[in-house]
Image 1 (cartoon, rainbow, N blue to C red):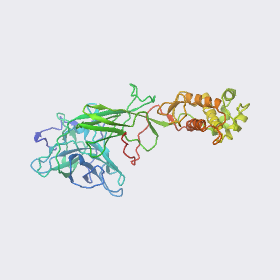
Image 2 (cartoon, rainbow, N blue to C red):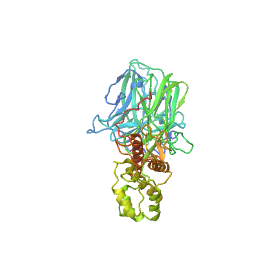
Image 3 (cartoon, rainbow, N blue to C red):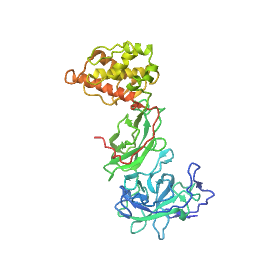
Image 4 (spheres, rainbow, N blue to C red):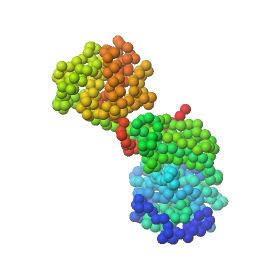
Length: 473
């Protein structure tokens, strides 16, 4: 058992009264092997060892390429900063709760801080940049107190969560562990900074199912979403991931002007913001709360023009469907009204549809969606993302963030066809044609199941190549 000291005070902690790793945590079966090292925010420097400031120090581990053996076993570890070897060896300098000091090792490398909560608030340490050379993401070691070492030396620890690892029930910052379950690395800091004391910027990344841009009481947070902090007081942006409840927190910020922005995942599925993606000019103090809303896009039951022109569509097409087609303001290639007398006539018209006359192609996509709704394949109140319309194009029911219900989209398309049956490029009004093309594209996406707002959050998948978010102007 390791006897630990905190800020120079001995702590005799018995394992029988220690807070043992929770049942939700799976203890690692073996002590760690491989090396850890301190690095900068890029994660590409190995064993820099001397830093200008404590905020510059990040923890990483494993090889610098994907062909070498790394840290093992994979899993979640604790980390901390203490006095270096010598008279004060082992004196804890990390100041936050131990539960906040966790990182994950996957594939033999550190892949970022593990989401954690203390007293109901997210508290995981900020991540550095993703290192594409080895797939790692380093973790910032701050906050920790100044060392008493005259040379400005510190010791970083990586501590395996074995059966011998626990948190002191009397002091949440202190860990109890066996030295055999650790890896360490010493580093130096040129300039000592006072412990951070200041205000917080926090918020919730929420799934905005009704796309109203407001965090409603029944809407849930989105976990593992990356939020970045920028400002004049920072040498670079700092990134955290939201916790299981979708909450994020940047704490103990010194007075100044800051901004926060979300980093949009580039991997599938497609995510669309319903609020601002960046908030700038946040004066600290006081505390500030900035929430971010998003939805993901996917399927909604749409069936394509190809379906409605083959035997499967024909099997569903009956007298009600034919009556619906004749009640719509559908158009032919020459702009004349199309009123089909049979399924065969409708099928031939559908197969010949082109965008030479945009009203014709809009009619084809509208007819397919109307059939989808009539046959119970798509809900009329389903919401789709259409995007920003062209200038001089007004679509009734389209929100300023680009969302519209299927019912409103069909109604707008049918109304446009009533007034404008012929919209040929270079011949007819280009504004009307562009507006019809906008609605045609939205219906096409929906018929192909690509732009429906999903009822609940999808998985958040980062490719690792996302640029940092762009600060608002």
